[in-house]
Length: 136
Image 1 (cartoon, rainbow, N blue to C red):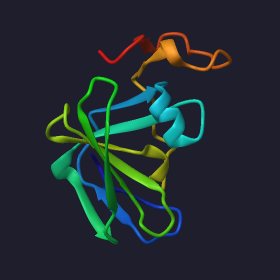
Image 2 (cartoon, helix red, strand yellow):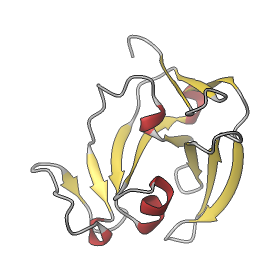
Image 3 (cartoon, rainbow, N blue to C red):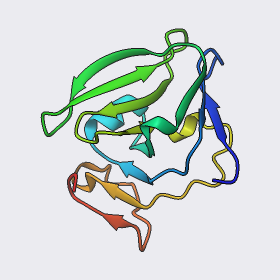
């Protein structure tokens, strides 16, 4: 990566820096991501865990079960509630940054989407985007 990318929560309390290239950007249409995002889908920027440097603030954490039964630790700003990242048990060594928290999102381009069987019927799937009815 040519330069570190930074991001944070809505109120500015929690700030972080990515110090390596992301591994993938995915769109997820599962009902948990719909609930978390308050929208039709969620997005996750998969990054090596060691590449995330917290610059300020300490995120609060809660755990939930994924559709496959694995544990997912979810981190968010304790002041404004913005979800910053997930730490899925099934993806050891990586974190799922919520890409909308990045200061600059203009470079983002999804590589695939999952859980399309639960997508909202009005969501149009872009041609050429790899799609999976469930988690691969």
